Image (tube, rainbow, N blue to C red; front, top):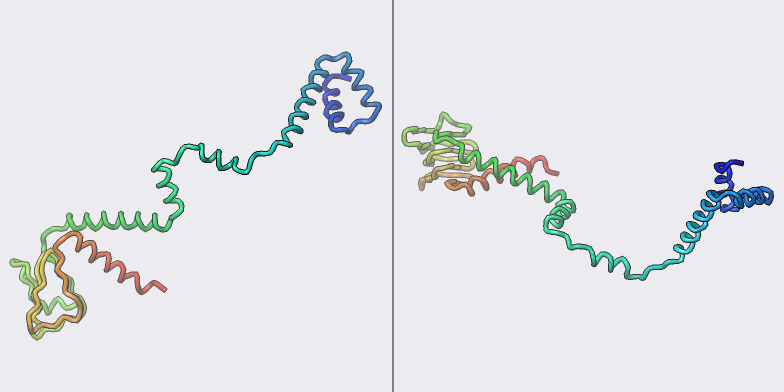
Length: 207
């Protein structure tokens, strides 16, 4: 038999799967073949090592001691781990950052032209030279009145909020405003105003 056939027999012999006749053939070949004899010797050493390693036991604090010797996490790794553990807060922070940047851009990019938003434009007196919007006495405005880049003078009635962005709201003693009056002259106030509006828009769709 050739050596490649004997290699198979060696493995079967070590597994205890050979009969007496096969063992005799194998022993006869091993006496004359140095290569097969060395191969069998190496396999026996490997088996002995594996069997001896199966009896090795580690102490109960082995894991703790190994972890204690590992390098401490850097601030970057700690921050990355926090982001992975709090995906909702991460998404909310990114959204807030992007929204704030967009609102800041809108604040600085706006021109100085007087802009008026109302459901009853025909009832208002708009003085574009002075950048003033007047709600005349005896006039009733339905809904909110929002003015950009100008002042608001309320002499009549407004059934909603009155907001002046980059301006001021003046309410006469005889005027009536059902909602709130806001004068927004700083970017922080502008961001807060827009955030409140976004929140009010989302409320109807929330369960």
